Length: 318
Ligand code: GFB
Image (tube, rainbow, N blue to C red):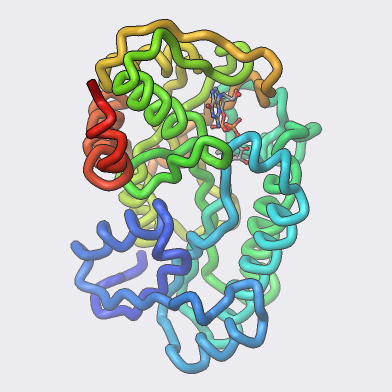
């Protein structure tokens, strides 16, 4: 439905894990990719308007966001709400003002009620209370969906929304205080292996279930939707299966080669008990993910070792 070839496509958030994966994927589309540098603060309306007026993109993929794991979400509620509201409002409005032909907004599976029926269908949005640890981020993302829907209704803008599940892959944040679970466990297992430690600690009980999608699959799904979907309802983008955090820790330890124990820190939050999304809607359109969790974790570990694990870590190994 939408031809990307020959188009000027602005990827907002190109420096992040998602934005950089989308740029890698767009290399196969024969389009011109535009990015903005740090001098354009997407939270500042005037700066965003000026960038759009100067660059006149035909299409926009809005992957810029303040993101983080459960602790970061819980610790910085104002930043997660304000930054994300401002980024999405500024980019979406500037896209309308400059007559952008198509825009894709990226949300998050945390928009759904904490106790939503599983697997979670798109229609579960706004049917129940949110998970408290990330309701600030969730409300900002729900506002982004509603902006796209309202612009579609009022202005006829072809703005669509994708809801990714928990993502991981190259370019992820491996900082133990602000990251999501998968990169955190990878770093813990890697450092424990080097230090010949007896155990690593996971947060919470280890029983929550999460669905993980490799960011290259996410990027492929986004480009698929960009080309093939035009509708008001957001579309889930996931892998279709979930595992417990304890099971995830086991796989990560196997891939990393850490053979010690995994212990649980019950003082840390579990968050939502389960978050498996239904992928029926995008599957019916003809898209499915390609990267298995184990392969994706192995590839991410290669990335971690090459780009994140410091020389000091490696030479510290016995
Ligand atoms: O990935 P994560 O931080 O985010 O945590 P959420 C997932 C689960 O892993 C929680 C547990 O039950 C954590 O308690 N966990 C165990 C750990 N060990 C660790 C660890 O070392 N680090 C981290 N970070 N978790 C986020 C939301 O929720 O998901 C965001 O806060 C966003 O808003 C994102 O939606 C996709 O899945 O709980």
